[in-house]
Length: 240
Length: 118
Image 1 (tube, rainbow over the protein chains, first blue to last red):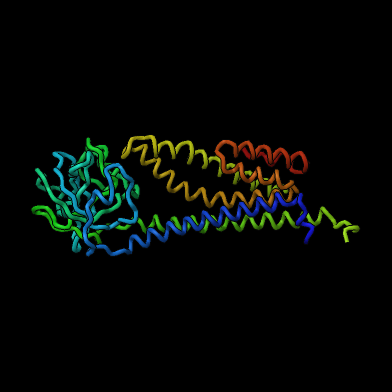
Image 2: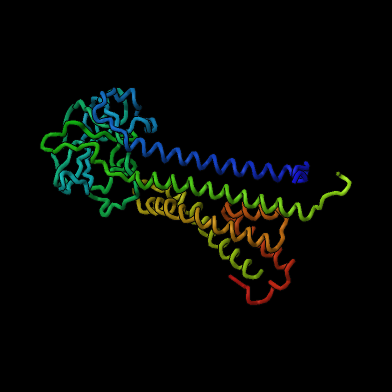
């Protein structure tokens, strides 16, 4: 066995170590992503004290994953366009729509999408003027649902990218569910957020397993290679 | 030997074509097409579902390639290059030709007419 420690074989062992290390590391990374997503989904921040939005994220910043569900407060002015209705939202057993309007946040050039409330029909009075909002920060949805009719104001999911097309102001990379619903609307609870993340999280777990299978494969290749070397390179009798 | 070669070639072709659709069609559509449009959704679909399928098919490809390399007694560097080239779009086809040519040269019995795949 010690013959395999000869310098000419070290390269082969090194390749194996790097390959296995990479596969294990990437697998752990995916496992971590899986964990973080589940944790974020399970965290209950409903009763946490609200933070100022400006301290949580800026108009151009990426979504701060750890702040998912965090209550935030901010003030601003409603844009005069861009209200949309997100379909298939169930509230107390009834199917309806989320009413979503962009609010230009004071002190920034970006608008935050605000879920103003729930309505049984895709219609609601347009918001006007200024507003102070306290609500729950959420990550934009995006499971790739197809919008059957791109020309109306009804969307199948709250995907920030789809709204960038409709609103001529920069958007925050997330949205906020208002704690207090707008006039004539029913309140939406953060627990009503659909959970496409189940699939995303599961995908991370499957990727982790996939990486470890690759690592195992690298080990098998290395093992066969070692055996081949022992067969084609018989021990030198004088080395004793 | 001929069976191992054919299994390898089928998997190399499947994985190679998928990889081209995934990287050279799906990814540009997803990131370059305007958000919310048909082509962009197509890109999302391709990268999500073909991406997952490709991961598992690539594992099968690795196994077929490795089994062939054992049968054909390739040296380890040749084997590794063949395995790794399966991850690079377009280059995977070159690796498949190179591997097939080597097997046919070293094992004349695989050369008979019936093995033509494409």
